[in-house]
Image 1: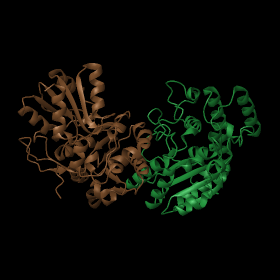
Image 2 (image 1 turned 90 degrees about the vertical axis):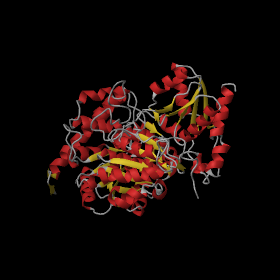
Image 3 (image 1 turned 180 degrees about the vertical axis):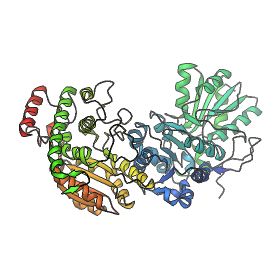
Length: 325
Length: 281
């Protein structure tokens, strides 16, 4: 079954195939393992799904399956970081950030340890498994922690760059990846930098600030809006923390309306981060597209994105209503 | 009995004296702070004194020495005990102890590794130290270092589920460079451990989880040192020392009193306690 959400034709200069960000992670981690001997990987019995299994197969001596014990996995990763290793700890986002939140707070962030928490199965696009396995508040939970960096890559190409970038950065990092294939959206010459947003285009009427799979959906929406004469831009705010406030400020100054788009609760995630900054620095007309204080449910990813109002049509409607057309 | 460190008999007398001084420093700093955990600091004082003054290889002038043995205070509320031994072995000036719990002090209410060199990892939220110890132990093995990891847990603390997740991990990865110590003082904040939520049978629990179990009197320095030595000889599995202790040990009117779990001595109590330690020491 083809799990692709959209066509890959939105952006010229993009040659990559649609790929799930978790698959890109598996490949990037394998490459990183070849280059750096200090890289160790931990998983909590989901290495087949998180794709850390590729690393495990290539480097069994540097892979530690901690079993179904997320709290212990995070603590063990912290210990490995203390002994000079570069640990990547992976499981599903809901378990990584929810089950082990206090371990992340007390042990990883408080001590500012070099632990990389790379979780897959973020958002409702997890699909059929339902709410118990769909992380809809993971970005919220991680963003609130001091010392934490939070990154949500938009496609496979960006994911590979993110993995390399966080390996070279000292400190706790949370990366949220997805289960389903997403179209390649980032241009070939794109270079990811932690804390730097990517502006595809700045619209005069509206700009969509998006993260993760919502970037490609935002691009789709912007295309539709442009055809209808509404000049709409898109910013990929892949680093949710620290927020690229410079880009955000310039974007807000250039248009009448900002719309945030995230496959996450509108409480505490990207929409909140953008709202918080703009309210204090450049009050703007703003709407948040995201999951509105609700749990997910079972269904296909496509059905769920529609049910929760996360499609290009939803963004188009929101923007049109907001600017009165 | 002799070992590479010299005559054990002489060590015992020396260690007894150090343990007494550690208790004195704990009580003094707690009295100045006006709050903090007296009982659990005193119960583990002999164990931690034996580690820092005898068993562990460490360099107070170089806290990040790569080949050092590691001590993880999983029961982070015994911070005064850790601070006392760190100061007395030369990690920082002993006068700093009176800043415990004060604004701007590196001696936070619970240990903070970013604030104080010598503290391996911040603790205070119970149940997390053993997982961290496992990670360190795995890392040391990967680096082919013979350093050992010591992790001190409280008895109430082992009610935390993560402890048992970590217990399984340590056995699975055969972490024989790891030695956990459970300070079995029998009390937790709300009362007797056996009343709050029973943990017995403790020995068979650890044994069933694949650990080598050593039971000792946690105030007998000879037994403490022998236990650490035995743990070092056991290969292929981690060791746990179940140390039977008395909460508040060393000060008669604190001993076995749950009221002194999280309460500091008053000035009057401090004077009486110091007098007692001097007489008994």
